Image (cartoon, rainbow, N blue to C red; front, side):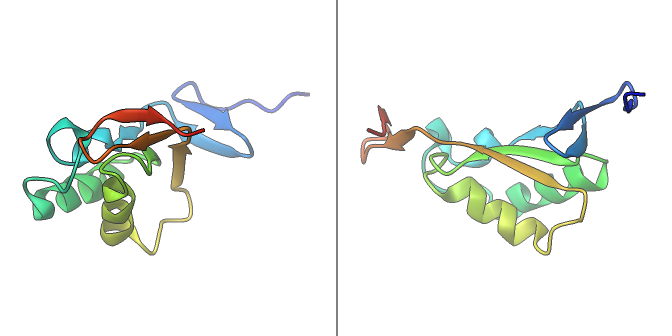
Length: 103
């Protein structure tokens, strides 16, 4: 008998996450580069998302770069047991905020 998951969730590896997650891309500054305009508001958004039931966050180290991951850690560490943080790799940011392949 196959295990089933509730309709509002899906299996992500060995974890069950809700279908609605939070995309952290816009936490960084304008153009997804540099720090956010309002650091405290960015932290509050992350905390509210988790408080509202979000249990997976999509991020990447090239958002900022490094900005969104640091914000996530500052806002949410120690992480709730059911929180899943997913990331992407394969790009670098230039000093001019350009998106470049990471060879």
